[in-house]
Length: 355
Image (cartoon, rainbow, N blue to C red):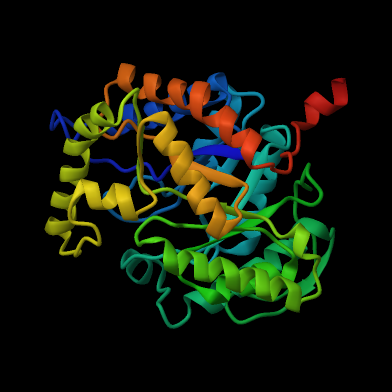
């Protein structure tokens, strides 16, 4: 199994101290955590894209470029690139540039996105966001592979023998399709032979397992070898400690703050207590053995090879945050890597060239 840390770069008061970092310090924390992730042996680090409060993750390629300059081996993920909102040509230019700056360490997760701000800022609505995502991806895919593209569509001006620069370093790049509920997204992934990344955050396991089963069915329908299907999955929260009692005690104020935030936003929570969330959600809070057992239980349903953990401190001190990640890498990751075989990520291009 492979392990990513992912952040959506929320900008909220610390749920324990009530203090909020400045915007500048919050960005620095994100980059520093990516450096730590590489130091501790995580396989990837992801930065989301959101365009409304409480997130400040509106420009993933800029943040990932800074991370690329501070790291050398860890894979860099977008989580997700909202192609429904972006001009595919401009998105291609940004990410082809980042592909070079990162020595070919870029991995894209695309999705249609969500949130009320999409309609306000970009005039993208629930009625057209899926079609925009599909059209944007199919053009983006061609731009990455072809030196000259002639194309016409609905949502941007047509192209005639268009050249885009720079040409990418990775040819082709792997593109994951992120999905929480959308069968259209997993069908698009299956059609093109691409992997999917299940959000697996808000609800119990059943709807996500159903979506992954649908992906595998469509994968076969489009003529692909079932053994080639690749699945990643998210988690709803993370903290590992030596004992379950210590983990629950330390994570409780973080969970309570999350419930309070849901109430302020008028969002009904799915899990009303921490014990229920630990039992029925994808949240990984507990001792090393509890974390191992839960991931293996989810793997029985998902067959996933990649998993993401929460990258942010989220109420933990720097020391607590680091100790939890270190404990995960020392006692959880080795067991899961052994029990769940996974295909390797591509090595950095410079590492291959100098080997």
